[in-house]
Length: 135
Image 1: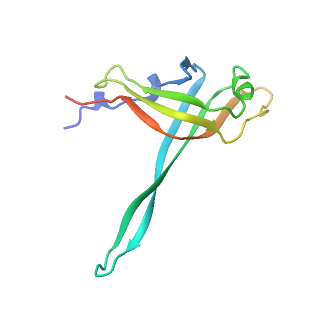
Image 2: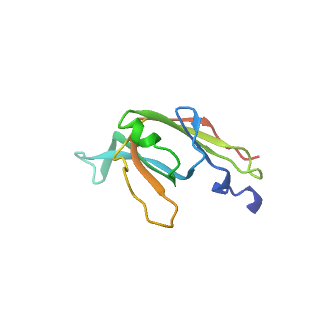
Image 3: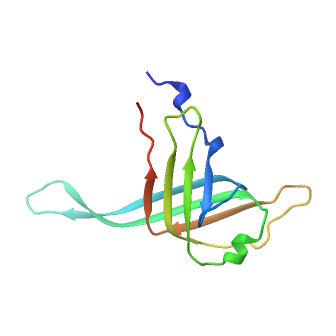
């Protein structure tokens, strides 16, 4: 049976850009999509699939604290996502390689509200640095 205390909460997640902890980031999402090629073969009534290229996309969201993303421009950077929870079986770190923003937010504010900054990006590889493994 599932031990509910082992379910990981995002509360202790961390994001690092080129090794610098981004304390203002409160949401990070990244995924890889595989392009599958459909093949129809003689003598086979099933459509089969061949692996094609991969595409990595993601989004970082957080509070606006500095002008770092504007200053960085469209240069590539690495992100390390760390997912941790004191009650979990451990922590997971994933390195997103050669990230590049899709667009740079120059202004987005409303009087009396915290300024949020959202950056969508693509990446060109990933590496699982620390996997979480159950007992």
